[in-house]
Image (cartoon, rainbow, N blue to C red):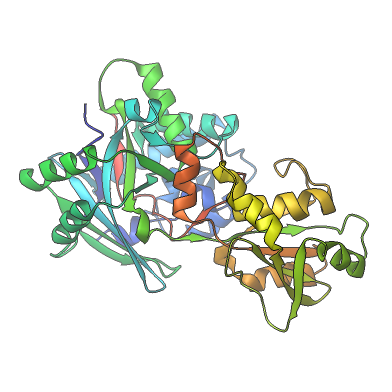
Length: 410
C-alpha cells in the first residue's frame, strides 16, 4: 500500500468550473452560503451546505440536509455539470492569491498511514463536527472536501508538478474573493509512477486544514471495513515553503476589572510597551500588537521570558499564541479555556488589522491582540512531537475550493 494513489476525480465539466467552485463548507454560515449561492444553480454550496435549499429554520445537521446534498450531487452529474474521469489520475491544483503561488498535488492518501501517524495531526476534533462530515460522506458516497496537507522540502515533487502544469489547465477560475484556482490532469503512467514513488519516500505528511474531514473519512472506512476506495481520503498536498499561514488574532470583551492605564502598567512587568500611531503587525514570535482605548501599542516580551520559552523542549511552548496565553490571556484576563470562555473570540488574519480596530471601536470588545503567524516549521514540529496546537492557532489562506475535485467511494 502506497502513501498516495491516483483516483478518478469527479470534477467540473469543461467550461463549468466557474459555476461550480465554492468556498469550503466550514468558512460560511448557512445565511452567508444562502446569499452566496443565490442565482447560482450549480454552485457546489448546494451539495456542501444543502440546508440553503430547505426552509431557513432547518437545522444544518437535520437528516433532510444530507438527503438534499445527495439529491443535488446526483442532479449535477445527471446534467453533465460534473463529470468523472475514466482513468485514475493525479491533478495539479494551483492557488494564486495576493501575488503568492502555491502548486499542489491532488491525490487520495492512505488512511492506514493516517492511523499510524505518518500523516500527522496537530488539532483535536469535536464530535459534532466529525459526525456531520461522516453523515455527509455516507449520504453522497463521496469525499467532496479535500484535506489540505503540507509536505517537507522535496524538489523532485516540485519539479514534477511544475512540468505537469506547463500546458493548458482543465480549468482556470478566479473566484469572487480574488483567489485564482487552476487544475491540470496528470494521466500519463510515467509521471503518475514518479509522483507515487517520490511521495512514498517522504518521512511524513502534515494535515494543515481538514482535521474533521480526515477523521470522518477514517470513521467511514472503519465502518465499511475491507478494501476499497474508502481506505483513502481526498487531499491536496503543498510544499511547506509555499503554504501561507495568516495570523489568528484574539479579542476580549472586557478588561477583567482593569482600567486601561492599570492594564498597561501590568503589561510593562513582562513586556516593553511602545505606543504606535498605526496598526501594529508583529515582526517576531515574542511581539504582539494591541489595540486598547483607541490606540495601538507594540508589546515586546522581555528577554528572559522569551529565552525561557525558546529553550523549551516542547514546541508548543515556543508558539506565539502560547506566549500570549501564558503572559497575558491567563494571568491578566483569567481566561483559562478559550474553547468555552465567551469573553474571548478569534479573528482570522484574512480580515486584516482594521477588523480588530473596528471591533474594539464599536464597543463590542475592549481590547484586541494581533499575533505573529504560526510558521509551518512550528506546525510540523508540534505534529512530529505528537502534541496538539492550542485552539485557533492557524488560519490558512487561500482556501481550497469545494467542487474542484471529489473522491467517489465505489
